[in-house]
Length: 223
Length: 266
Ligand SMILES: Nc1ncnc2c1ncn2[C@@H]1O[C@H](COP(=O)(O)OP(=O)(O)OP(=O)(O)O)[C@@H](O)[C@H]1O
Ligand SMILES: [Mg+2]
Image (cartoon, rainbow over all chains, first blue to last red; front, top):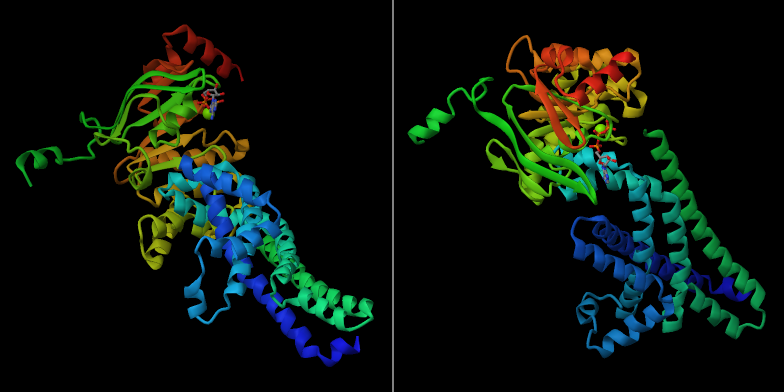
């Protein structure tokens, strides 16, 4: 306990890294997931097929395997992300975000697809009838309504993402779980250390839930 | 401009000239094994109001929806202004902007205000600047009598008001043709008239050109007042085609007699 408190800066910087992994991967998987969902419901058969295969394969693969693939497999295939390092970003951090994004986007895509299916067909037909293209129909009419129906499942997906950032610890990234391991290794007394780190995760999860509730309430009033 | 161009563009909106706006030529359509449209041949003049009537499942909605290609067809051709409907993509979207559609269940965009419902097509499809789109939308909302509701959401309006907004949304695009698929059959009886009045106003305007309209409806009053022609459909075919007066008082086919007998009973 004292060990953590006297090294509180280490505790904070570890959670900063956790939050960084979370935020970058959340934005990335929201974008990729929306794209995958749009491909899946879109009119072009092979795109829809490709999205379906990607989602099925990646969603059914353990996250650890995806990490192994991105962090160990890709460099062996000659994909080294040098340009990322030139930007001054740790390529380990980047690869961890990539692995988390590739994985989480499939869950985002499924949540959004169920949201899209909850939007009555007539909405898209009316949009097409006034001359909107597929893209316009999605961005102006279907997705804004789908996102509303998607807030609760997306909140669960993002809470899972927050906790999944801890997998990065296995690859030497000193995020919160890695730091906890470090403290418990040098202290004999694990329980308080465990609790104080668990508290950190609980606070972050509560922030996500709170944000989701606010969004849900605001969108309910707005119609 | 060549001489022949000048000749054909002479008086393009004159109804009654032999200048069809929409032509369906040997149109066929299946849903799986079900043959829903069988060899449909129809030509609709500019300014003409055509009412489509017939028993449930006869293919009226499908016919209406093929005209803006919300349903594809398996055989034959449909053309607007002599040009066959495009297959997919940007051109099809551009064509749909020229064809207004009003649905049985209104289908107003639930997350947008009444005003935004009407301006969306103008700003995103016609690329009209917001200010003039707002003005044009308000003009249309006034025309259908729901201007005071502009800031509300669809769910806050009555069915009759929602359907009038849906008409305004289609009119704002200044379409060449309007399709109506049973626009009053989801409405409570006291609201039917306010919607039909708006439609009669389009068909027989006090000033300006009449709108070309295809209306699937069982409202005989509307057909008698506003329609130039009635198409009677059964089993995917156009069984009978006549003026409203002739059709309602003197149907020729047994199918039509039978059908009218049923709807006149209640
Ligand atoms: N998307 C679809 N898939 C399969 N069958 C369909 C589809 N849409 C319509 N049908 C069938 O095609 C036939 C014609 O349907 P349509 O909706 O055009 O009839 P309608 O004349 O408009 O009937 P109603 O008066 O009930 O609206 C019906 O038998 C219907 O069940
Ligand atoms: Mg119908």
